[in-house]
Length: 199
Image (cartoon, rainbow, N blue to C red):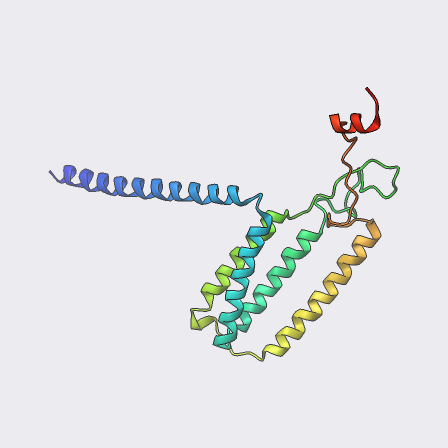
């Protein structure tokens, strides 16, 4: 009788954990589906991030605190931004083919170390986590915030200077706007043939 009771109790626990794991798996699949559907909507995603950023900034402004959380968030943003600007394979460490430096060399697209979608996702998640941390007073460490801002600006300027020097040295531009786009030959249409006077 005791053995039956133990087995029965274990079966209920297994059933509950099984249904819980099934529910979390379904929830994670739906979340991933929403993320996958949002991938091509770049402008909408960044507008959503701007809303999250604005809400966090308002929260910190009205609470007049959590500057350490914001400083840590700023360091994380800087690290993500540097990965976003860097090529996937560092030209300093690469022995094989490098980025093209002349117009006659083969075209190789710039591949980021951190793709745009992952950059957006990491930023949005970091701001949401930082926003949640502002509801716990243990993270509100009293600090003179202008010093933290000064430290962050010095760090930003020094790292961006190093990154720009790296970009100049290896002649790469991590942005696609302003670059020439090769579309190939334009297919002739019926209107073009009529306008040229050819049969």
